[in-house]
Image (cartoon, rainbow over all chains, first blue to last red; front, side, top):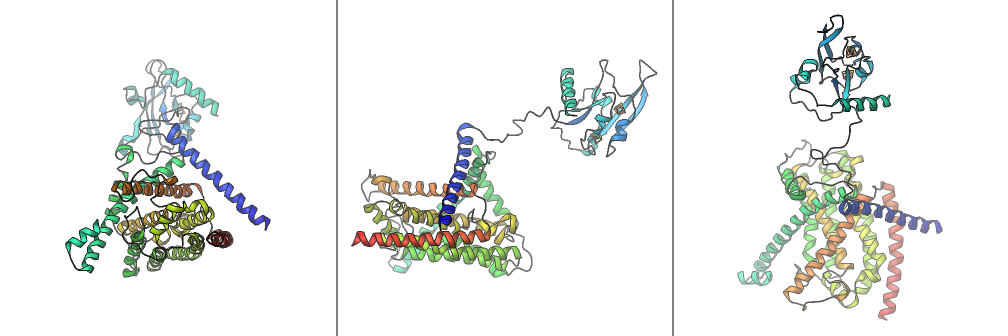
Length: 171
Length: 346
Ligand code: SF4
Ligand code: SF4
């Protein structure tokens, strides 16, 4: 008998506690603007420490760092990387990628290619909004197109360095 | 006013009452349709706020046009049914689900003199009709020829049968004092004696919980428990028929809150007997309507608050809660109330 009333009493208290929590949340949203919602196209979250799209990296004189070792191609699970090997214009003994094409329709942003690369020729750019409206455009030619200014996103050298530092910390 | 207008149109009493009924039901339908639309919008907003979200805010200023968009979407939707439904019953069910709670509004006193008819048996009439609305759900579940629907409908019936009992018993405790079954007189009693909620708080709590269960609102929404029964009794319904069930559910909710307000919270009366206008004047009616709407809105908000706070009960918990908690407490409450009223009234 005692347990019966105790149960009812405790239950009522628990229900009231729950109701006070929801009410508090509601007033938090209404009065203090505490909603967790991000109004996406207008506001964005600060996501620069997370992975985004694979992007080629260029050294100081504007050439790709890639030595065409094919490590990334072997590492890539869906096989979405293709490249053409050529000679470095200033140093004919050095091999360099003339084209480096990435099929973003297949890429799963797994970062394996970046890990495989010993020459820091590619990295994950912190771009999260990069929609394509046409499948044929998803084959992005990084070395030539990006040099022409069709960059996925303009990144300063400092930004790239910061990012790499952050990513290294993750592994 | 409407009565006089109807009388001016014809001398035949039955034509007068027909005109009167038509005008009143159109008015109630229009107002309740508007209320339901804003309730759905508010429900979405309140649920969002309680979950630390913002809710619909893209369509129109502050998302206000969202309710119109919802309505248009529901009405324009294609009505897809499978070919084994029992057609007549299937189409009848949503009509019953809307008509029953809607008809019960006929005797709810919105303000002094703003009431379609003042039955002597108003309370019994209202409870007969709320009990009838479960028939709509049962028919829907049966005619859908779908296991989930039938399960939902059976749950609705079980729930209805169980929760009607504490509700009525809780009400009986109040009736010991008011000694009337007319809703208008219940309010008038409270005008002289103070609100019923003050001396029957237990009855009020039990009545409100049972009313929430009657409307199949969360945490008692086992009837349409999405995680168990797809959508319960309205799994097979789409488009406007689904919208009618939705409409019926919200009208039932409004009815339950109106009844609670009339029986326990003094209907159109302002708190503390505050009365700035002369009884019977137009301003007094508007003042009363305002208070009635405010109290109903408060209770509706409480129902939404329940819904977005409590998890759904399991079917056995539902039954245990009713038969082992609500019914014994309401019986003891009734006994105490009866003794007190006998002592007071001599
Ligand atoms: S991120 Fe993964 S899938 Fe994309 S190119 Fe690199 S290895 Fe291939
Ligand atoms: S991007 Fe890196 S891993 Fe891939 S071929 Fe060039 S150097 Fe090798």
